[in-house]
Image 1 (cartoon, rainbow, N blue to C red):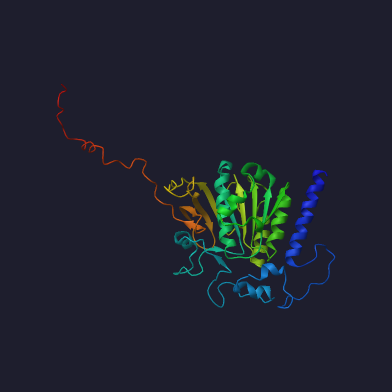
Image 2: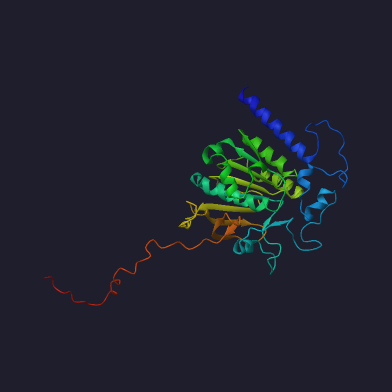
Length: 329
């Protein structure tokens, strides 16, 4: 099978999967849409059973009230990141109720250098882990092949460390950027998805204000969050609600236990520069990922390399004092 045939087959399979999630036929010629009632819900039943109460109205065909009307924002509109300092950047008014990352919007995570691909991918997985904790359904991941050549492929054990079940991922690798954008738009329109994640390499002319606005509008209608990872990208104008500039930070040394296994690596840590935040204010801080609680946390203080010893003599006296040395012999 040629490369063109494989590419066509993968796109056809993606169309079929999205159509199956939306509860419709994957062809242009299809029957009229059935009414979305409680007796005939849209989408696969396995994803609707565990849907939280705030999403039940949409699953039964009723329009949910937009955020800010008829009550405060709830988990259907916000995703708390677990760290008060970070969630405070999205604070609305004088209270933290409803603070957190906006769901149903486009969020852009960028790095100025491609060598920071590990830090960028790790922070993107952390955001997905927080979203998957409150939203049912699978995640559509659309990757540009050039980005995977730089940042690598997914690893099952690493995903589990972040609290992400690999079985919930639908991974699509596209050779053309046009196909990446098309997949992101189609995924952002599917309300049965928990989230959509895209990964591209470098600053691309096609990822402009028009293309990002199309994705953002579809995400707002379906309430599906879209995370766009951009390796080695410049500060270009887009329609993203937030833009996160990510760079790696030094991790705390692991705690070595005498009679138990321990982690050989420290917790992932990042320097975050939230340069755009249309739902709050920008900010700059350093955070790390807590694997045990599956949430963002404040970085712990580094351990001293030399803790000293009680068997050693007292340290040298302060400078500026004159001491007489006893001659040898």
